[in-house]
Image 1 (spheres, helix red, strand yellow):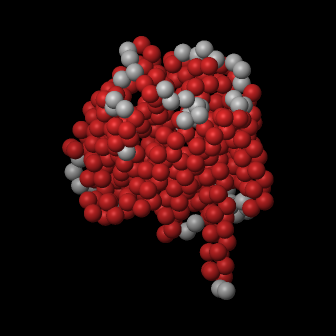
Image 2: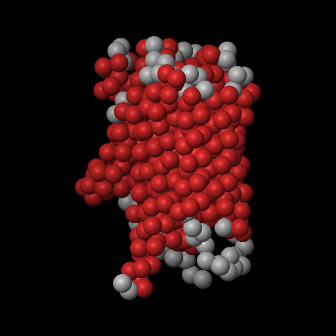
Image 3: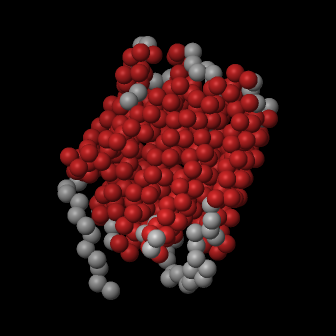
Length: 404
């Protein structure tokens, strides 16, 4: 076997280990997420408080992500990933033992801090896979995430039959097994001496403020579309258990099957149908159609009189997001200067992170104070307002490099 072939095989083994660890980590995350609102309600928390509990994860993740990036640059990707997985295991134990609302807050904050290693996982791929295969590898990483989101809630609902603490302990056990697996099979990806001296760069917050000040450029428009799309989607996921419980009597023992349905639709869209659709209609129209599906799906939820009619409405949102987010990201990569691509993607994730903080707070406040339908109406209206930008954009071409 030639040296390039051996290197390729070694890269595949490392990528497979990372994808497996990421999938198992997401299974643990998805075990507890749908159950959280029901547990909080049992502890007499209001919907508004539940919104803050959900948002606390994203706040901790938003704060910790840059720190994890620096840790991984200095000490290596592997130690950062192992510490993050261990933090998640501890968070799930706290979730299983939580008998007060503040412990639910603590579990989410610890889990969010550990979950700030998403960027480290992406950097691991960049270290490991040549540029030509990097997009495909990141797609596999995303598919593994979708698979975990699909499987985890079902495991959580089944574990809930064994008692209130069981789902948290099952998630923690999976995390411990995942730490051991990663310790054994996930080698360090950074080569010795690869840290070097990076050129000084402006902070992401400076670039984010530029998007706010100059919203007319293609990159700014795309970032706004991406961030507000994430806001609408997160509003839905934040109140979905509360909505299904209040309207249809769904509880912690049955909620998992709804997430299984949504996850399966998302997995099929992203792994099988997205590529042919984009080849057929192009990225710009895929983004526009994704916006339209997301808006219709959000607005239609409150009109479902039965679970069977809701089953017809549910696919609109996963179809919409499966088209919207990858197409918008691809267009951002075209519109950005290549030297600024990392900054652009970082700003997009910053806007998405802020959306994941704001959405649970706003959605649960509307649910509690104005009625069960209002989170969906407000989310649909916000996405519709910003999606006008998608229909006012012309064809996006590759950015011309600026002169040095």
